[in-house]
Image 1 (cartoon, one colour):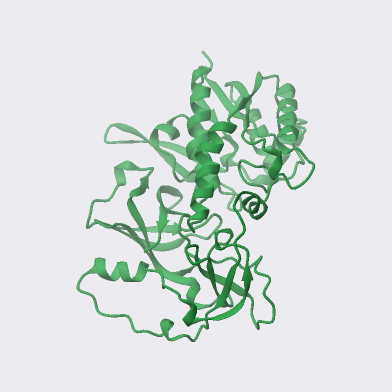
Image 2 (cartoon, one colour):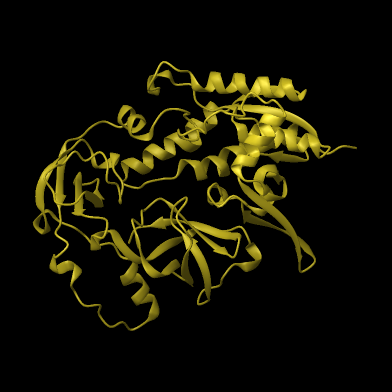
Length: 398
């Protein structure tokens, strides 16, 4: 019996080639298109991206001679991703909808539909790889970086579980992007030259700032600038009674107040902005560009500093709350008091950084060897050993 694979056909080149490769490998392949969003009030043009993408997916399925259908997951998307996203932004955090989309939709809701169709596996067009290893007599699934260093998307899958990985296939993970386009062209797939989607995972061509502004009410507030020479950055590090106290101090954000800064402009709502952001402030007359170093949604204030090297942007340590620590490799989970040297990143495409994990009663402290710019509450930190992503967590604010 052929193994049956349901491919999430998105209408892009990556998932198209994933389906082609699975057919070449002898699988029985079914194409499913996820309709995730159809609220026309938030489109930024007259285009209807999901309709266009759905049509391309249908044409690819037709070319490949595989069954195809569309599944409407917009209700689950709204509930699990969109509502959560707005809640997080309103509370001054910056969620990552792409990571959530994979955990909650593609490898949960979508996977359940696929399994109901008798699928042995679910496949996507992610640039990452999966390997199986026997550990203590049991199969363990490893999530590895994609072979294309410019396209590696393992970070977006940092919240997957062993159960989800067991049923997942990533056919294009062994290929470079130009090779994927080459395969598509060779097989005469309509998506061969289609541009990569730049929109949010669930909204297609809608950009995040416009989306937020159409959903969250504007609220005028003040933009403050904090000098890089402010005494707060010169304070000497105190001595500590314990390592946990030291890590807590390092992970604690500076509490900015208007008295520490000068008024340099107005904004339309602190909940629209995120730490490290440079664009969209519309404040001129400064020697260097202004970067956001903190937002306060309760007081509706934004604090900025001049230049990418402003000390307010940098921190060496972050905390993941106990309930938000996630191990893909459960067999490597740390107990309280244990440490592990890893490579880590705090955002997609950031080069991996040397760090040490410290598991404590307070949660997981991730202490980097070098200070990191723009550590942002609500985003995900992932930790890796060599090519393998072994765990992740939501960055918390202290």
